[in-house]
Image (cartoon, rainbow, N blue to C red; front, side, top):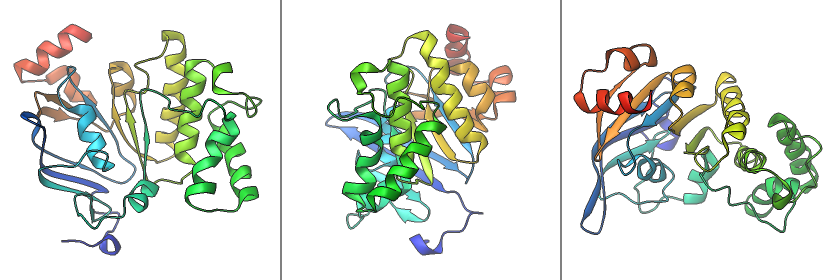
Length: 252
């Protein structure tokens, strides 16, 4: 098996093989296999409860797995000796709920992990954090508290906060699901720009138009398995499995 140092960019950056995950008696993932190459944007779609969010939480070691393998840059996520902090430096994650610290400003929220977790120089982190806040188009909101920001703005602070760790892969777990329709677009624009810059992204999303536009590959999950997958240009028009067709007919 490749070691963390043996990984090269011609291999999948994230390689998932026959992953099974149960919560008690409930088997949520029933043998999922997929690869994500460096710079690729992969969208995972499917009905609620199909295992999408569980799968990407496993990539970040937020959920353990019962069987199978998840490699991130050649490192086995399921290794009991894994340093989870080292993994999470490489794999950023943005959740449906923004989870910002309410008593910290936008700038302080973005700076916290690099300063307190990585022990980086505060002045350097602040300069980078200000750049990231500009990047997510929130210039002028550095000193605002989360309660003073819209949901879409808070979610963009959460994206900047994740980027502050300089990850190699970004995981997005239904990041627009809790937002008002008019703020969804500003978050999707931010993610699209990241994708265009070559960030490797794995998104669980219900935004089909967005998936069609930015994804290199789309995976449809249902009841814990990948039913069908393909590039968006064929996935949406040539789906062959009845479950995929039914799902798409309900949402497109």
